[in-house]
Structures are given as structure tokens and as C-alpha cells.
Amino acid sequence: MKKYIALLVLIFSISSQAQDYREIVPFQYKGKWGIVDTLANEIETPKYDKVKIFNDFTYAEFDGKDLFNLKTGEKFKSPGHFKATLNLENQSYYLFTNDKNSVLINFETNDTIQLSEKYIYARVVQLYSVNGDKTNSLLKLYLDNNKFKLFKNDKKLTPLTNLTYGWHNLELIEKNMYPVGFVIKNKGYYTFYNDTYKMLKKVKVQPNKNEDDYYDFIDEVVIKQLPTIYKTKVNTPEETIDSVWDDSWDLSLYISESNVESDYYLDEIGYSSYIKSKNDTSIKIAVKTKSYNYANPYKMIIIGETKSTFFYDSRYMNLSRILFPKKYLKQE
Image 1 (cartoon, rainbow, N blue to C red):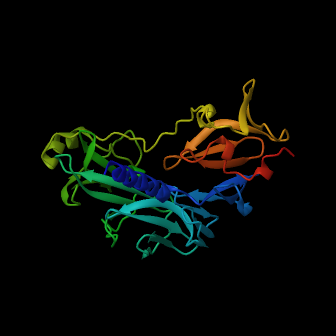
Image 2 (cartoon, rainbow, N blue to C red):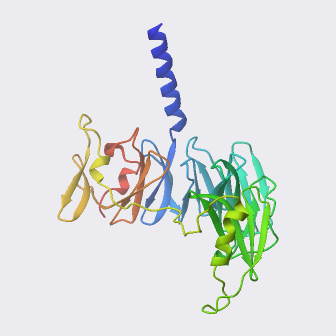
């Protein structure tokens, strides 16, 4: 019985790993992007100028023309340039923009939502009840003029208003660091909404004489009203940072384990680092000390001198099997 259970655990583990395995991955050589398989065989020669890789490292879009499923290796025509991943009603939709308009696509269900305008980016803002429970979310779709429109987060993309806003028109109202509502500033009025999109109050605000055409976003009069408006003690809005890049890393962490014999090794000369080969002395590639993490455990490493890039999966790959065609590793 124990052997049977152990076998089931092993099968489940292998199955889980197989689901996360990628058949192909992008690579870059001299500023152009191509595709390799997991044995570093070249599938697509470096011919694309730009690549957009989805957050979960499942799809890669090239030049707004071709789209690759990295898990299956499938290639098909892209509906446009990939812009963002959105969670609509707990399902993943991908925003693409082409010369005519934008479209949201769920590849799992083959659901497509056509949009009437072209958007260059999108962001979902999670909202909470005053008790700290997740409730609804606010969808911001950005136009190419640094303006955005607000929508309720549903598959109908119901507009919250018919207006277009700038960065100074919207602020979140927080309780214990969780957004419990938001306020829109427009033509000298602050309109407050709760987490269910319900309009709570509209307040007239006097202009700030120290700034041209702007109002203090939350003045003292309005701050005093916030606990009444939201029936709770709230924090005054503060600017938040969406994401932070950590550029510090150590390439030696990505070299294969000590019990694995690796053809490639890291050679540090002064302040420079190079990947070299024990079996091919013509291979010497300069590596910048920087990497970017995608969906764990996929990572990107930048090769310095040849303006090239390779990815690898730290669960299955080590430096002896970098996902980059060997012919491009040689110095010219």
C-alpha cells in the first residue's frame, strides 16, 4: 500500500512538472529574436525585432505578427501586439492591440471581447470591503495620450462613466492599506465611490491658488468627511509603486549543481564575467550581471557583447544546457 501511494505521489509530481514544462523558449541574437526548443535546437531563426512574453511564461508574441504557445510549441497568427494580462471574473484575458482596435482573448475558453478603441495598457485595481474582504475591482484601460477610461470588472466591460481621465483625476481611498473605494476629481468636484461601484457623495472643492488649474486632491475639509463617507477610519491616499526591479544577483547561483558535470563554466576576469566552454575554446561570451525573473522558475540572462539573451528553466536546465543555439555562442 505504501509503495502504491509512493507511486501515485511520483506520478502526480511528474504530471505537475510536465504541465509546467515548456517545449520552446525565445532567444535573442544581435538584437533579433528567435525560438529554440529545450535542447537548444533552433526552431525559428532570429528575425523578429521585439518580443512580449506573457506574465506566466506561457505565450510569446513577436512584432505583433506571430504568437507561440511555449508549452505546446504551437505557432499561430497574433491578433496584435500583446499589452497586458487581465483577470476578468477570475479568468485570464490577454489584451492585444492592432492597427484598428484592441481585443481581449481568453485562450483557455476561446472567448474574445472586441473593444471599440485602441488601448496601450490595462490595469486591474483590486477593491476591498471595509472589513478587508476582496469584493470587486476597477479596470483602467489606457489610451495612447496618457489618458485612461474606467470600467467595471466584468466581461461586458461596463463603463463606470463616459469620461476620459488623467493621472491626477483618480485616487484610491484606503483602510489599513487596502483600497475600500476611490474618488474621481472632475471640474472642481470630488465624487466618491465604494467597493461596489456605488457613488457615495459628491463634494465641491475650492481651487488651490498656488497651482494653475489644479485642486488639492484631498483637502482638509474633505479628509474630515472621509470617515463619514466610508463609515470607517480611512487612510489618506498615498502614492504607491506598482513594481520594483531588483537588479542584484549572482550568476554562480545558476550554474549546475556540484554533482553535475558542466561543459560551460563562469570565468571572472576583473570586473567582467564570461561564460566559457571546456570543450570549445572559441566560446567566450560576456555576460552582464543582471537577470530578470518571469513566472518562477523561468529566468532571462543578458549576454553582453553580442546583444543577445537566453532563458532557462532552473528546474530542468543548468548552465550546461542553456537555451541558446551553440553556433551563436562563438566569438566572431
